[in-house]
Structure formats: C-alpha cells, structure tokens
Image (cartoon, rainbow, N blue to C red; front, side, top):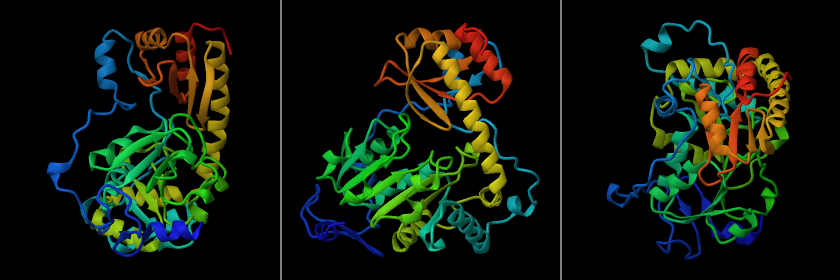
Length: 365
C-alpha cells in the first residue's frame, strides 16, 4: 500500500480521519458520529430470496410444501442438539461471548480474538457501518447484494456501483462481496486498493482458506463473515466482523452488550469448532452442485456464475420459467436488473431434485 494511501484515510481508536478534503463534508469526523434521523434517505424496499408469502399468493394452487430454492442457504442445517436451559434463561456472559469469538478466530484463521466481533447477523453490521463513517464517496463492486448500496445511500453517502474495482480510485470507501452474490466473482488484486475496504465474505466458508482475506488482513479492511448460510441456520441471526482491533472495539461499543443471544452463542461455538461436519458438508454440496449443474444444462440454462451454495444461470424465457416453476410450487430468485438471470439454491434431497426435474420436464439424469 502506498504512502499516499496511508496519508489519505486512516482509522484509529476513535476516528476515521484523513488529510484530504474529499467527501461531501470536506472533512472526516468522529467514527462514532451518526446522522440525524431527518437526514436518512427513505428507499424502496429491496426484494430478497426466501420470502414465500408473496409467491404463495401468486400461485395459490401450487402443491405444498413449497420447494424454496431462492436463497443461498445450506439446505441441510447443522444439527443443533439439546441446549442447556441456562442459555435461554439468563444473559450471556463475557466468557461465553469470548468463547464464541475464539471459535470464530480459529475457524477463520484470524490471529487475535480482539480482531473479531460477533453480531446478530451480518445484515446488522452492513447497516451499522455506514453510520460510523462520515459522509463519503462510496463505490460498490456490482452487481451484488443490494443492501450494501442501499444502507450507505440511506445514511447520506454518495454511492455508485462499479463493475470494475479499478474504476473506484476516487472512492473513499470500497465495498465488495467475495464470492459475489449472485455472480460468484472473487475479489482479486486487493493489495492495489488504497481506500477503506469492506469485504462481505458471506459465501466463502466452503472455498479454500486462501480465498479469504481474514487470515492476512490488509490495512483498513473490514471482513464480514456469515454463519447462517454455510451452517443452514439463517434464522439464528449470527455473523462476524473481522478487522483491526481498534475498529472492532468501536463496532463492539456500538453493538452494545448482549448483541448476540445465548442460544446463538452456544450453537455458533459448537458448529464453528466442528471440523468433521464442515468437511462432510463441503463434499456433499460439491456432489449436489454437480447434479444441479447437469439438470440445469438439460433444461437449457447457460451458466453465469456459482458458489458451493447456489448457481446463477441465464435463460431465454425467464418469466415463463418462473411461471412454470411457481405452478409446481418451486421458488427461485429472479433479478429485475438482469431479466435473463435466475439463481438456484441447492435442493436438499433426492425427492427435491426429482421435483425440480419434473418441473423442468427433462429426462432422467
């Protein structure tokens, strides 16, 4: 990283500061500064996968239960097992929270527990970060998870979406999802970046460790890691931020005490330490992903991108395919900004694969 980059923007215990006059305000203020509610921009709600209510109303006669392939969540969740009554009945202790952070530190290859903070889902962190940074020019590498753009814009930042990170040289904050949702693109050439970098690694757990930035964190970089997607427990609401210890301490202060529930701490600690389960899940998802690839090819889909938890494909008649799948009680993710794209999560069982195959009206795999 160049000396110019180091002089331009820096983060310490209490400030996000800089020597330049970049940004809407002309100066960088306290990291803890927040914007009055009257300045918050109200944006149109974002459509997400996983909300079956609307699609069930659209196809009221579809067979039940619905097969929801609209998300990138592991369809076979980590087995929770029995939980002590105490995790429900009392507030989590500092030692328990520390045990969770230590488990995350080891799982993600981070060198120090002080560089990890747990939160009630990465979405909470995505919404918190724009409130801690003074109004800035923000570049989001897209197309990607739309909440990043929306959350920064809502707090008054000047946000643009770029398709090449090299074009974001004038941005004070750069945001990337790696692997990307929905394209599966991996972030590369991180060393050349010279601004605050936020990297959402929600889908990286099942890739080789070297794909992640967590173990070798560049300066002024914040990495977000999701628990619920890989472990199939999205409803638990658990995620992590990884960064320089001083910044992580500031995030912890803003999250406040008991941000993560006792059950989430206990389940997360167990799961993150379970090497055997993760290895088996990785192997199973690889097999099932190959099976899904074959099925999609037979149904005339062209591959666009992928992660171990979903496939992004192109089709000449997406509206017609969504209609056909909906009549069969199968929900997939379409994209208004890319009308030829569909995203498929992985089916959980032989029966689910057979149901999808029947809806596609293709022959035996």
